[in-house]
Image (cartoon, rainbow, N blue to C red; front, top):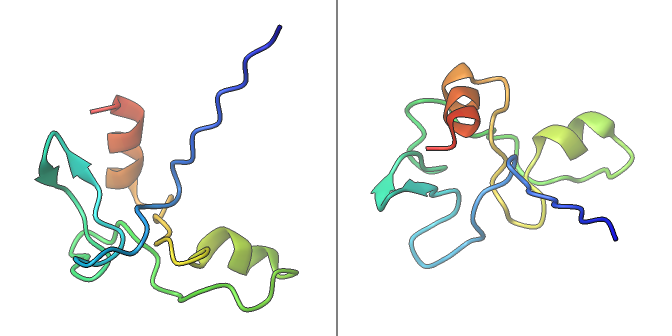
Length: 82
């Protein structure tokens, strides 16, 4: 038996009554799509052409905000596992 663990680190929380893209760390808001001062999220809108690889990698999928994986602060946080 093999176990495959698939964890998606490039998309955020779904839309809620307080907005989208609001990851928390031990109860502390660390980023937010609407107030993204540290550029943790892409702001390109949703995918309009699923054949366009750039859009699939960088645009919002199904209403989930897409994290900016080129942002070193975001990458460091994910690697640390804080």
